Amino acid sequence: MVRDFQPSMNRLAVHVDPGRPDAWRKPPYHAEPQAMATRIAEAGGYLLAACGAHFTMMLARQQFPLRRVVPSEKIVFGKVAGPTGWVYDVHVNPNGPDKPAAAALRPVL
Image 1 (cartoon, rainbow, N blue to C red):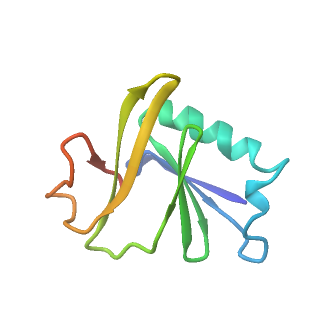
Image 2 (cartoon, rainbow, N blue to C red):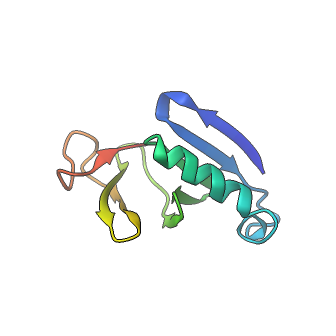
C-alpha cells in the first residue's frame, strides 16, 4: 500500500497493489487503513482505497465500493447520527457538484 494525503480534498488515498487486490482487506493490513479512516472521518475527510480502476471509500468503520467515476460526476456523502455513531450515505452524483442529489450531502471528489 502507498499512502497519499491530499489536503486540498481532505482525503487520504491508499493505492493498493493490483496483483493482490484483497490483501488490504485482511489482517494484519486492514487495521491501519481502518484506523486512519476513522481519524480522518472525525475531521470531515475520508479515505479512498484505489486498486486499479476499483475504488472503495472508507468513512470511519463503513466501506462503500464505488464504480468508475467520469469527470462530470462527483462522489457525494452525508452523515446522520445513528444509535452507535455516525451513519454515512455515499453515492455518485451524475448531476455534478452544483446540483446535489440531497441537501445533506456534499461533494467530495
